[in-house]
Length: 262
Image 1: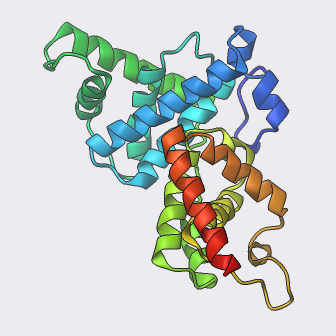
Image 2: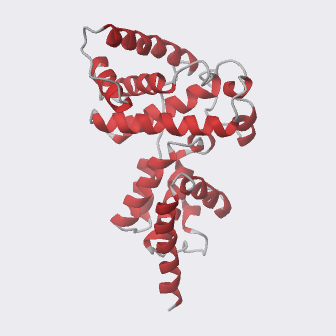
Image 3: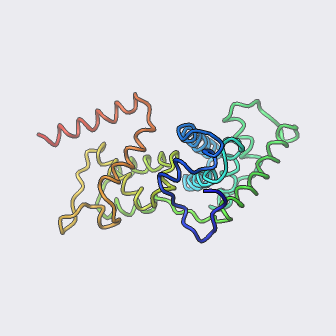
């Protein structure tokens, strides 16, 4: 899968393409290591984005830029944190929530644990130069295609349409946030991820979601996708959580099952 993607092509890939044909795989970086680096980079974007107080939509756009970039560029060649910083800087401009390069870089350095630096320092100037150079490379790699559609708006509309409550929506929103640390956004459309987030949220919120008037699953009104696919997406999100958090989720699900059995 060499080369850059032209602007008229879709930004969706098969599982096989992402597992075997990325630039990192050509550099002998394993699939497991690449997944780990993608999680690290997206997590870094989330942390820095919250630190500089940009909206979640900006953080999400930066995360998608990051995920797309590393389909065609290798983690061996480009530093995770520099590229994550660059993606957040560009996303701020794209989503009309711009932050000065100085602020993004200084907050990124702080999150990374580097000593406090001034704008006059050689280290700051070097970092800024790297970020701006990476921005040009990022734009070239994604073919200047800055359009990114997210699951959030669909999630909120779907929850409203099925008469779900605030808790259902909030937990689903959190799951969608976490999906940004995976390649799910490179494999499934935002409408599908929104439905997967809602289905997963309903499992842990004890929300019984009604079927449609003609007896079909609730999501069939929004997307043409199987329950297995939605559950698979949910499983991929759940795998991100540490064992102690998984234990809490599983206890909630078990409690849900007991309540329904009474």
